[in-house]
Image (cartoon, rainbow, N blue to C red; front, side, top):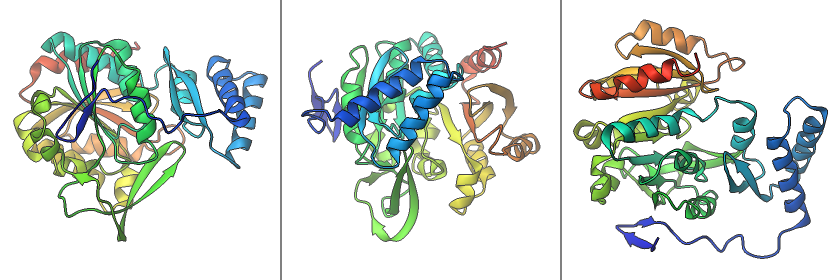
Length: 334
């Protein structure tokens, strides 16, 4: 598909040249080890030994590798854990592609905004389930952007747009520090560091008419979901897409926010019913956002042993056509 740039958003970018050149022996070894792990039996002695070797390598280096995730290989740093969890947990990261497939069947179209697109693994997995979609990948981290460009350039059945920015509530709110660890990036408030590539989701959508009719919004920003949603008020009130987001109460507390603030904010936008998944992708139950006691009970069950966080799928009260998705997802593994 021909590359084109419109309003700072790039569709189907050419692959990055950053990783060109001879691959090191360490990269080749690391890649072989990781692919052996994701293809192997998790509890086997051989797999455990290989994973230990990977952890030893990570103490000294973090080489670039190409690893199977689903039906395709994705380019990433060795420290990225998502393909490993995807391989050993049959429910992990499976819900969103199914949800996108269901929405496309209902609406006969699919426009996705992926905030916190990371290395493009979500777009890749979605593209194994659906074709003919437009996906806007929003990612501001400069470490992940070359991987995002390369991995999404391999997607031929959907149109990929990339916005190289962080989502904030207001443009003046740009004082953050970034920390990259285990294949994910975290923002933290910092009065000494200003980030230039910030924008609100309202502005990004207004600058590209294609996504004025987005029907699913995915947010995974490691505790900055409230900030993202506060910069999307017009979009959510006018378009109110289905929302799928990571809900990590501990991260909100670290940002001097209350976990229920996020729930109450979505309720104020008209989002009513929600399906909670545990962090392994297992459906927990369908709840109303007004049912604060039960939601607080779920939060209290996070023990960082059996439950680390929740993924939440929520729909607007005007969108009863999507209720069947909540019900189908709840009983998918039963």
